Structure formats: C-alpha cells, structure tokens
Image 1 (cartoon, rainbow, N blue to C red):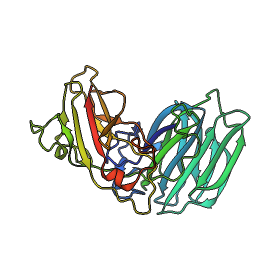
Image 2 (image 1 turned 135 degrees about the vertical axis):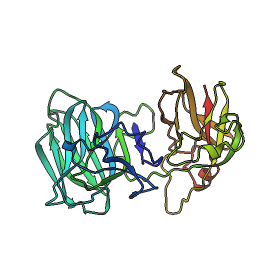
Image 3 (image 1 turned 90 degrees about the vertical axis):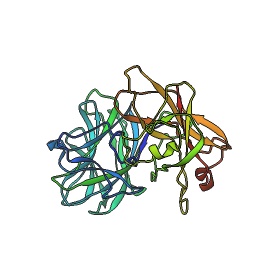
Image 4 (image 1 turned 45 degrees about the vertical axis):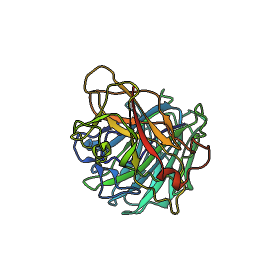
Length: 337
C-alpha cells in the first residue's frame, strides 16, 4: 500500500512530521527535482538538523526519494527508525560518494558501485525488510539495482519501522524531493506492494470557479472563491469556510502539461483548520465528467494541517489510464461534513 507521496509542492512543511530544532531545515524553491519546491536540511543529524516523515509502522517498506548533495562530506541521507531506535541507514562518505548500507547504528553491510555526484539530483530507492534471519536491505540508484544485503536486519526487538529521517552535513544544504513509501499490504487493491519506481510530483492550483461555490470566503461572499485558495505557499489571510453539512466549493485547475509524461496517480490535497475545538470534519476529492469522487470525512485540528484525499491510479470515471485532457477538465472539490 502506498503510505504517502510528497513532493513539497505546497511550499510548506505541513506534510513533514518534524524538522530539527536548529531552524536550518524546511522547504525551499532554490532546488527542485520536479515542480517548484523541495525539502532541505543544512547541517548534521547530531546537531539537530533533519527532516522527518512518519508513516504506518511496517515490517517491510520500499522507500523512494530524490536527493541532491551540496558538498562532498559524510552524510546520512536516510535513517529508518522505529520510535527512538535506529533500524538502519544509508550513508554517503564524502571520500567516495558511494552509498553505504548500515544495519542498526553502526554495522555496515553493503556499499554501492554507483557514485552519487555533488550538485545533481539522483533518485534513490531503498527496500528494507526487518527480520533476524531473512531480512533485506537493498538499494536502487536511478532505477538500477545496486548494493544489496540479506540476513539479519533486526538490530533489537523492534520488528517494524515507522519513520524516515533525512539529513545533511555542516552548513551545506542537501535537498530531498519526490518522496514516497510502499509496504507489502495490498488491502486497498491498488498493487503498491513493491518498488515505488520513478515519480515526479506536480501540483495543479485553483485558477477558476468550479461547478458549485457554496462556501463563504474571507471577503465575506462566495464570488470567485478560487482567488482565496490559489496561494503557494498557502496564506491564512485568504480562505474559504463553511459549517453547513453537504455544502461544497469546487475549483477549476491550471492545465497540465503532459508531453513526455505518464500520469501514475492523482489525488486532491488542501490545508485546513478547525476554528473552534469541536472536531469539525470535511471531505476532499475530485470531479471528473460531472461526477464527484470524495474521500471519507477528515477530522480537522485547531492548527493548520494537510487534508489528503484518495489517490486514483486510473480515472475513476472510466477506469482507464489518466490522460492530459482528463486533468485539464478536473475540478477540486471540498465538502462540509
């Protein structure tokens, strides 16, 4: 099952689980593997500089990320953890530029043959299966199978991993983009149970009124609400709101440029807040060919947070592969619960 997909394209850090305490990490438009933004860390893990993503605890994961090294120093580019326990990590020594695979906090078990250059984006995939005898820790670089280890990948009693940490070294910014993770659970029937593969995340922002506009904007009316939700990064000064169950707000989206691209999945996303601590809920989804496909109710908190809808690997209207024209006709839909 795909546990998350994140390209930092809202230009904020709300989809990260945490960042280090130093303030030298976050989101930036200085570099991007795709879209406009990427995450970055400028400093060593031991100096409290990192970005982290939490996900459903799993005994076997396939993790994907793009990385751009800024300098030739030692750095841990991915650290898999279970709570406070380090299950394993990927390290790039500055002297070689090759990825070393570690189990636990110090046991090196494999080294890549491919060098990760400074100043260029590279796609890294990491397959980690936690077991004390038939465990696996292996990587692919730009889709090419490289270093691999099989054996004991269980450094202590923990049998799962539930978050990934990305770091840098010194004050050189290391950038991360196009993150995703699968586990081996196929209960959603979407088949995301192995390597994530290539993926570049783009965002289509609201640029017009959709088929219905029933929410009230921060300008006290429901006219041209799309102008209040088209900021990137999002602005809390402009917003739409509603408290009547079933009311919807819908928006047309910027055109997708599909030349040379294959559309692998589409989902709706927003930033939202409950202005009163009462557990308010909303649904989010897409409208295609005059039909709405909405998520289950999402409970909001009294701080802004991400609201993520269901991912559609094919167009739900015809169960066929997504096409450029499908995305150009798509609408983003919000619904009050």
